[in-house]
Structure formats: structure tokens, C-alpha cells
Amino acid sequence: MHLLYLDDAGSAANPSEQYLVLGGLSVFEAQAHWITQQLDRLAEDINPGDPHSVEFHASEVFSRRTQPWKRLSRDEARGTIKSVLAVLANARETARAFACVVHKASFPNQDPMEIAFEDLCSRFDRYLQRLRASGDKQRGLVILDKSAHETTLQRMAVGFRTLGTRWGVIRLLADTPLFVDSRASRVIQLADHVAYAVFRRYESGDTQYLDRIGHKFDSEDGVVHGLAHKEIGNPHCTCIACLSRRSGDKR
Image 1 (cartoon, rainbow, N blue to C red):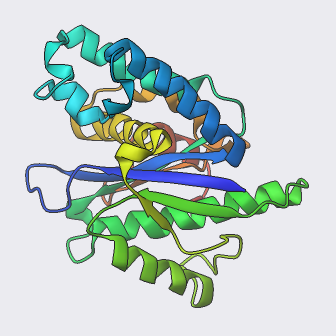
Image 2: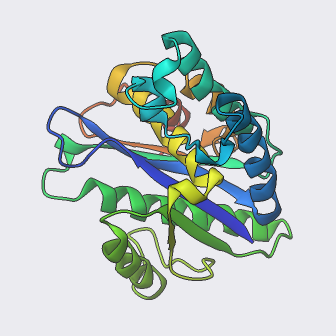
């Protein structure tokens, strides 16, 4: 089975932020254990005495306001985020990044989380369809960090399998999404870093994190399918998602 782990960055309710990002990574089920091992090794470097107490939450690492991140220098904290992202960057080909960036002001009457979730479910399903066409018959499952959106997103996912999304019916998801505590899942912690890397690029123009994993976003024939930038009135955007679509009419 292919597992899509997702987390969000930014807040729908924060007026000082322009964007909300839902993002993460798809892995084949066996890869989840490998990723967990890699991040456990990083945690041992941070707190050798109790590595399991270390939760890699990118915004907390970046701000250095809480332990164990308070004792790190600015460069050490940035380096930690990059080390977490390197686990995805160095993973096998079956690990793919996915993210949807929603410019909140472009959709004043819609919940940006719901926009992003619908988009990513559709993109993940189409990714699974491409794999199926090449002989991989595995289905997929979406796993998210626990949040206030749990009930809404589960209801939406049921509707996707019957009524469909705006791009068609979801066919290859095995079940409704699962919600897990990020403290118990290293792969969700990596998804958090993917979402944060994307958020930093769009919200602050800081590309140093996204540059580490840009090559891991799902793509085919030069088009980056795994990253969506939803913003009205920005036709000349130079992000990798928009540039790859500019030559054709691809959402």
C-alpha cells in the first residue's frame, strides 16, 4: 500500500499570513520503517539520553523557543530542518512529495484546508492511477496529523468516493483518512517539514528548504503534479509548480 502522510503549515485564521499549506509525502508502506529509523538517529544526536522525547516540528525548531531547540544556534536549528528534509531527499524513488499552497485572499469564502485536501486527494489518486497503469496495483491511504479538521476531512473523503471531487471520483483510496498524533509518528514529522519548507518559500520567499526536496515532488513529462499553487491574479509566478504548467493547460 502507498501511504500519503500530510500535515499543514500556516493558519487559516491568522490574518498576518497569506498562505496555508497542506503537504507531506507518499511512501510505500515498507519505507515508513526506514524513515522512522533515520529520524530516530537524528533524535539521538539531539538528545542521546531520551531520543524518543524529541519531536521534529519544523516551526518549533526554526523559532528555538522551546527545548531541546533553545540551546541550538540559529545555524544549528536551520541545519536540523535540512537534515530532516535530507531523509526525504535521499529516499528511494517510491517516496514522493506532495503539497498544495492556497493563497487565502484568493478564496475568501472557502476554507483553505478543504481546498488543499480536495486537491491533494485528487493528485494522490491520479498518481496511484499512473502506478496502476505501469503494473503497481497497490491502493493508497491518507494519514494526517490530528487536528480540528478531522471530522470535516473524513466527511469530505467519503464524498470523494461517491460524489467525486471537481476532477472526478476518487477510486484508489482504500479507506477514509487516518488521524494520528505526530509525537508517535516520525513520518508525520517529516510531512510537517515538507509542509513547512513549502510554506517558507511562498510566505517568506525563503527557498533554502524547498530547494532540498524540489526534485522529490511527483512529476511526469516535465510537469510537477505533486505541487499545486492556488492563487488568483498571479499569472507570472516563477515557482516550480507554475513554471512546469505554463506550456499547457494543466491544473
